Length: 180
Image (spheres, rainbow, N blue to C red):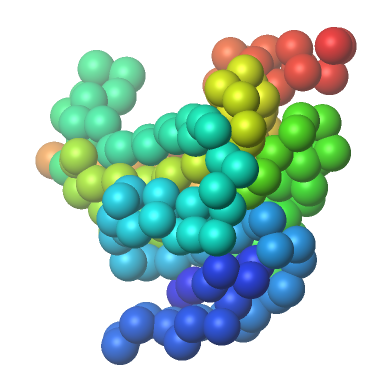
């Protein structure tokens, strides 16, 4: 399932075989995608920069599936989400980042479905005129995404599976933004 938000991708049709939940026009500076398909970081960078010569810095985070968690070898991970609610949550996080920092553009892509170790899960690209706003806003988005966006991860091991539990360190990372 893919949701496209923002003017850069809101006009595109879903790729062959992809499911599209709808198009939401937010701000021309925000792009939010939830999809099964992998993403190409280079393509995301090109889309983010298109028509924005004022961008002087892009901070990027890409999260991947680890092969080991809590001492167990992970063979795959299945990510679920709450359609509609998840996209709105990501949009809210993006709007909060735009309100807090001087950003030219912000892109969030999060995958769902079955993923294997080394597969990409999430990308956050934050663009601004200067590096500090890009760095800080990218970290802010990830810290809030980890705690506020309704995604559920189930790890598969050789002979069992388990749901990934929330970590106190994720709450602490988010909370530091609330204090400042």
